[in-house]
Amino acid sequence: MKKEILVNSTDYERRVAILEDDRLVELQVQRPDNERMVGDIYKGVIRTVLPGMSAAFVDIGMPRAAYLHSSDIGKDYGYLSEDSEEEHTPADIVRKKRQDKIESVLKRNQEVLVQVIKEPISTKGPRVSTEISIPGRYIVLVPDDDHIRVSKRIVNWTEKRRLQKILAPLRPEGFGLIARTEAEGKQEAALRADIKRVLKLWGKLKKKADSTPAPTLIHKEADMVVSMLRDVFTDDVERVLIDNKEDYKRVISFTRQVIPHLKDRVKLYKDSKPLFDLYNLEREIDNMMENKVWIRKGAYLVIDQTEAMVTIDVNTGRYVGGKDQETTIFQVNLEAAREIARQVRLRDIGGLIICDFIDMYNRENRRKLYEEFKKCFQNDRAKRAINPVSEFGLIEMTRERVRESHLHALSDPCPTCHGSGRIISKETMATKIERWFLRAKADGKYSKFNLIVNPLVAGLMSDNGTNRIARLMKIQKIKINLVRDTTIPVNKYLVFDAMTNTDITDKYLA
Image (cartoon, rainbow, N blue to C red; front, side, top):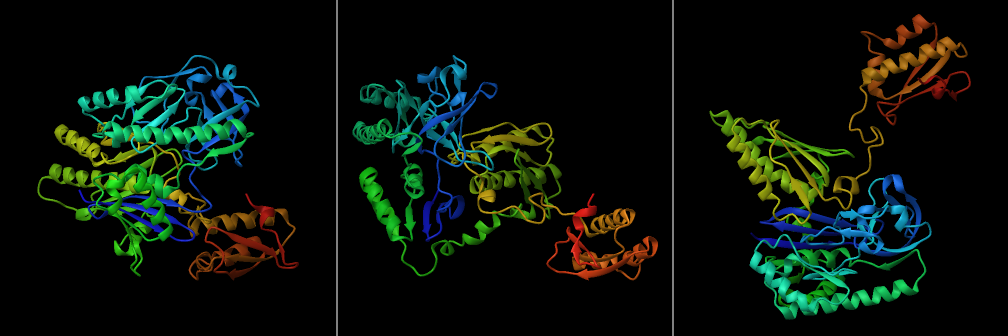
């Protein structure tokens, strides 16, 4: 598989795109007003302990308090981790076996060292953990631990045992080590150098934490470009194209220190044509805001994101297939599975995801669809769990969510529908207006009005066939001057007292 990484920077935005076989599969965006927090380490102060929620709120110096759940409290506070060989990064959430109640281990105004594991989302503050982890290129250093673990993505048991054997004598006293996926095949010298590098970093931030009053930022995770390349710039990446000199220098410096054998694959892009235009990515990025996604053969997906979950519906569209309906449906579902996996990664969708595939009666086809769906996520860096196809044709999955999806991060709620995606029809609006005048007539304070509405609503209410305004004036014995205003949305209207030109809209709302 051909794999490339593109880095595009301007004064107001930085973007990292990952391409597989010339197709965009992952995009990360950072802006000055929305810098990433995952991996940042803070010295915070406990402000509130909530036994009923098994959680506490921590002041880390941000506008919103950080959320610390009991499952994210380390063993030094009375909790034990379950044994795990899972690769651990600052974004991971590792469940704990609770020994004591949270109110007995955390107290108000207590100072704690915490690490952000989930970005602020919507009205929620960041989620933090007291278990600190310092990621390197090949290993993760875990202070106050004594385990040696190996990434679950390394499936070869011989390789797992080899890494554990190498790391056992290298483990510093009082620290745990986790071999990352990139450690596969690496020799002792590379692992030793990586441990030395992250151990030195831990020493610096620990010294700062001991001498600095809370709340304060102790350690800022590497910027998005460097951290992305640390995690995804592997031997299978053919090249990295960077269009900004400062980013290029920073990446070259990083590769020289950590992965010198890949340094020659980093290139500075100097062409006048924008880098993303070279690969026709801008249109695809714009399409991420759309809920309809066309796939091959005329079929399409409908992606709806809500606060609770994301639903993805598969439709055959214009695809009619051959004579065998089951085969036709199976082929559409396979194409849909591949595109769903790409869209989930590309849009950075997390949480609960429900995929509604077209019903298939053949059990073997259902099994093949499930296997293909799992296979399509094999390059996804986010943690996930995928259930088999249900009897209703659904595949339910969860995917690690550490930040808002691109849809929410790159867009604002519609000021007209306020995020619902629907507005009331002009017919419904006309009826609401008529009810308003019924209430105003019953009050008896006004008899002459100026009604200001969108031209579409005005056209409906003054149509020669029905002329609802004329009928309303005749029955209620009132005077209405209809005013068309293109700046008024279809679902809004204003009513003024014609005698004093006073806005009285709110007086008779339902």
